[in-house]
Image 1 (cartoon, rainbow, N blue to C red):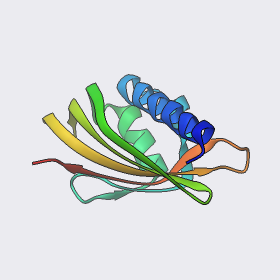
Image 2: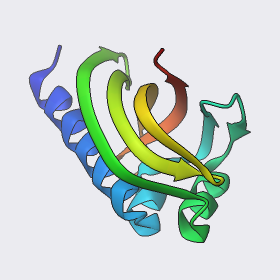
Image 3: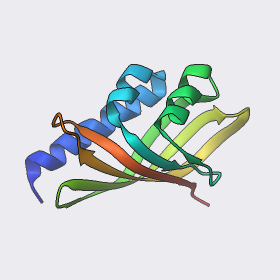
Length: 125
């Protein structure tokens, strides 16, 4: 695995984590590809604008997002990340305080920055 690319993905993941915690839609806009397909823990398929709107409207609020068990796999021009996180927050009025598993596919944009093109989340039971 290319060490410098792995470092770039680790840094992008941390930038994403901080943007989620602060609902920073400007940073999220940079990190999410226009073609994003995100399947959330409820099985809903969302796009980039749906995700940004959830943060901006307050439908989604994350207070704690602690990652562990992170694995990164580089394949051609994408990076696949799976990470378990402890998440405390609220989505659509429902409070969560549990572990989630996220899988994200990062790809290089035309401007050379890493963006998430596909993501999936599930609750760890």
